[in-house]
Length: 395
Image (cartoon, rainbow, N blue to C red; front, side, top):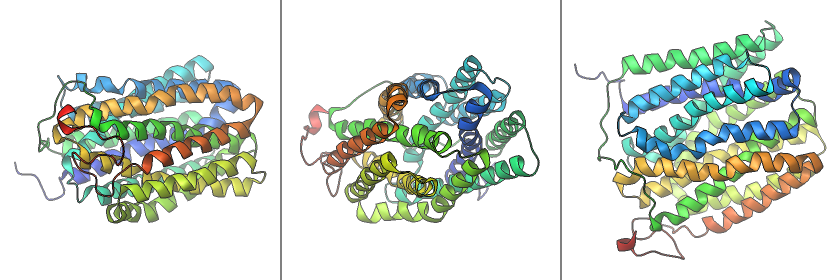
């Protein structure tokens, strides 16, 4: 039976992105309040939980081995199902060990899905349409997040739903959308047959370095900026939900345009702007004393995430198309080398000086800025970097 007009890879990517976002948004928005109120976590314990959450990301290179027996599209569905189950049961295990276990299950699904989604996106989208479409995927995810946080705000403020019920609804919604995607969409074929073995190419070294630093930068936002809001400024679940809604309102409004902008100005200029901004934001985090100013920094910090899609489009321009699936797994592992270490290590630093955590984040943003300036204005195979070129034949 021929596919209907709406049964396109782009629409499938949108639905899967929405499914992931609903579950993960609920999990993340409740996390800091849930672990403090129900499990009495401190900075070191939340840091260790976040390190555990990143372990499956560190092991994402194993995705290519799974692809020897499972199609990428099917693997995406299975991963989303694991994410949904992990989130759905989180509220029923309000203990240190229970949270570590449910977090690991949720994270296995999340990180394998993100690995496969990155691969499928770069295979299904052309170089010309990728920046704008990746921006639209961010916007779609942000709209889904707005719905999730609006539900969370109402659930806490008007319906007094328990943590258990909210987690169950978030995970269940992910499972329902995943089932719909599996039943409603045909199996799409990649334009280029993918290599099904692990590989690292010398000429991709700058992409690997940017990916590594991106993993380090992400932890400052996802772990410590959110924890700052609750621990230092006393944000409630409703406050956090409102802040997240504001974040995603901005993303919904601007992410698609930011994606198109990356396509116009190029990856070098886009990443330069991002990292210059992050140096200022992280430094400001270290010294902020007002909760409203901290919230403003949080929104600005989140908006910069949209520019990070330039790392993916940079790789798409320099890559052998057959390398995309394998490199997606390797890149996720590289991204999570820092992500596994930083939450636990910086969590110990946090006990002594929260400001030092954010100043170290500013230093990492400076390293990323130096790397971004090494991207050529027009990257392509054989023209991957300005300095440190590797002969194509040796790649």
